[in-house]
Length: 458
Image 1 (cartoon, rainbow, N blue to C red):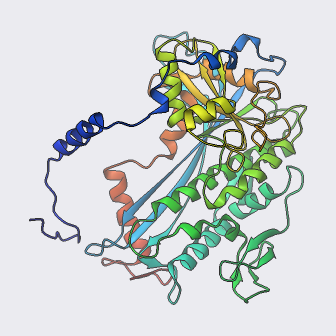
Image 2: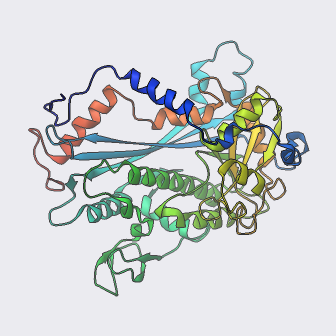
Image 3: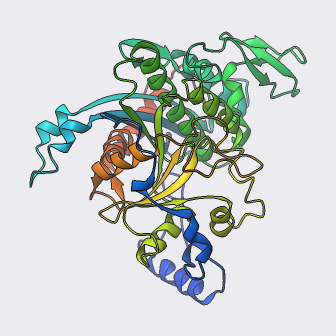
């Protein structure tokens, strides 16, 4: 019979390995269809596999890679009250000089000094109560999230090329073009659903008089659960937005102030696909327009790296059975979408979420990588199937060359830039999470610390 601990949760058995075995046994006896596990009767795939050497190679090689990754964690902030949760989210960007990195490929052992000199890091983070606590008294949790996000976006300063910008500045930059940021954003009032134009300062809804913020356009508060739970899902949505804004700021600054020097040779590598899911999905179209505003003659070098998911599992099976050979690329058209995703609308797949097109590549050393690349112009996905490629993606061959150069054995199908960015962005388990727990208690003003007037716990 479990009993309640001092932390408010229940005592559990110390060994539960039999549960995993039992679940796997039941799953093995069950009958279900897994598209990623089917590699037979794939004659239709033959025309969708191309050799990387046949791709357009007119684009000059990249000299530097800027990898972006984010992380989030939710921790209990008050002993005896497990419903009080505090959230942290952070994003790291690591710049790598490919010429210096290449010198290490000929060495038996990696020189840490050379690796250190070849990389530069940038970092920003935000934090606020996510459940069971509020930024002030007299409001509900959804409003608390809205105010916390607005405060973080206006106060958190990101340094880019010696210049500082707030996260809200980057949001307005994303809504505009590379040369001209927007000055207003259309926001739907959370209370009356009236459409309003909101600038940098908070505004008042013309329909009901509620206070509106430009960050309300993210609609992350819509997924916040007031009763129970950690609200880690909405925090994950926010973290993905932060990763996108980090790219927008860095790419925009290079384009604006170093268009003839560093911009052409920089590849931005983002952990995860180039997609925006959930309530903030409107940003997908903004990102697509923003990237293409930099010009189609020399499109900004950017790609997403997907490490897991149905497409990655299926690609691994193709490589395992040697249906996808080294230095070959899979064009992920509507046939692949229908087979792997199981969608009944394969032509329309991705049009609401992806701002780049997915490809699967197998490197010389056997690594399988799922990459997402923006089209030079137009939509990568639309109602008519979009642009499967490889035509219309002039950066594709140069991106594949970087993937060949930067393989890492640290992770399965790993890449050095993503591994380094992940190492900077990830919250460590154990001691690291304990530190964040103590920090959240101090920020909330509980457990002996002086109570902060900013946050109220319930």
